[in-house]
Image (cartoon, rainbow, N blue to C red; front, side):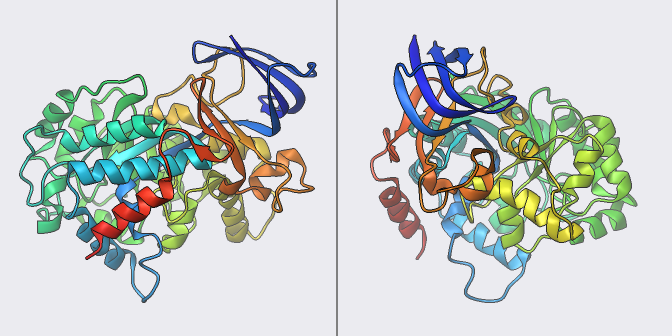
Length: 431
């Protein structure tokens, strides 16, 4: 049994002082506020570990490299494809371990990796058809983060279009072939769970969607990120993407609709009645000019919200949580769109990734916690429950994942110099 004494801790009922946490077997056994100082002392504010519900690890390579000229989402996507074409299992493993280490340093303890980089360039399977998935699993283990590998079905280059040359490595022959490959994927480690994803209604033909709908674990899907997707879907199917997903059985309580930016009122109703969640990725949506999704409208309809860093234009859970509120303020021209508790709930929604035991400082929960410095130049003088608006990832001092310290005193204990790892691997991927 390990005992931790937190100067302050954000418990289910709010921020409490002098909180003693007793941890054994990777789980929290007891939580006692107003306790005498004992055990390992954690100054600052202890929070539950954050959940990164939507990640494309290889997109991290584009940070700071797509801002120099005007362009669109679609021209940005071409640069994504160019980078993807240069990765193999070894280089992907090295890159991903640096990206996942950056996440843990920022306070994330679980990540949902929306994984569609399956085969070799040109689409030829590796000797192990899940080699790229295994590379991600190994990278997550080395970085000390929980991983839900969302193996993504990607079959078409658009409505009625075959995969392009640079998309060939994403695809399987059809949804049944995708399912057989995923069923053969048996990664080792308590830190990993396998989920599934529909890349989008653009990339998975309607007649293939029912195969994905049979998936019983976490199922994620890009939904209505761009207006162009809605226009094309209406042209080809005479219904919105959300309506198409509902008709084919993809929406449901295990499903997370990623972005959900351009929804109709009926679309919001479909997500609510099916129990589908929505994952917002504010820093990426802002970076790509996607638009501002109806976050408050979804929440008011009963749709659960979660957050992701997606393309990793920024890896900072505080930035994502604050932006959920701030972007909605801009759209509504009104303050106070979400409570602090709602924002923390969205930022710690590990159950959207299949980790229902993670995300709260309470007896029986997994022993994940993030310690935030309340005395930095950013956080000095703030009220502790305003930390999501005052702190940044740079204020995270310590991170415990499943009862194991992964970050102590702002240093990653498993990967030396993650910044150098990232610089080396990203540099090698640009000609």
